[in-house]
Length: 255
Image (cartoon, rainbow, N blue to C red; front, side):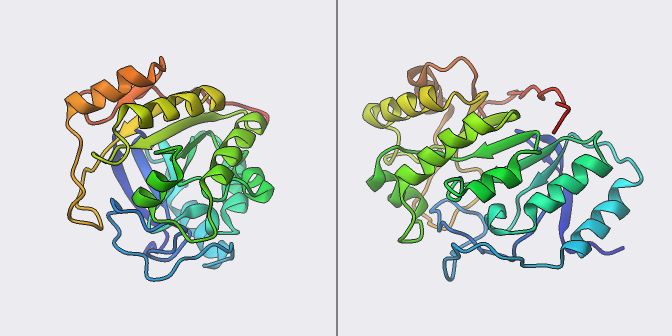
């Protein structure tokens, strides 16, 4: 079978051997991040809908996973923001029922976690990895360039609500962009938000492949180490450091 919605498996710094699941077309997103490797978003999308036939995605997953390939995660990610797809909850539940031996992860920018339906769709996943790179509205908009109606406070509140409802693991990504969110004040703001959210892990990330804007550069390991120290959170990984290994969470039952 030729797969239209699966990619990889890829070797991931965070998720090890990961099979990607893509539920949205290329560059369908709520953000137009300066660092995005997918390129500029031609037009924002903030309304959830079904982009592809759900059964086609399930058929591909059935065909691939029936052979029991060695994988650490099945990961919803890819070309845009996966929570824009109304199919994501159904597909996650299919995977947890049909292939419970696999961990399911969702990479999300967190922009729709204010929506109770989105939070409900993600509850069966084993790990959710939302992004929070600043608690300052101006800095947030400079980095992520979101759709006009999206507000940072809604994102932070959505992540907080999700933490209270969700029994899986939250690995919070902080994407570090030098000169934008690297000052002591910026990091102090993030430290306060992280303590309120109580994620299971914080992961510092920075530019790895060319982004949308040529002026964006990667932070070096020394700068990331400074930020990690200032965050003062026990489970903070500097993903730019060679040899960083993220332990896998235990599988949970009853969801």
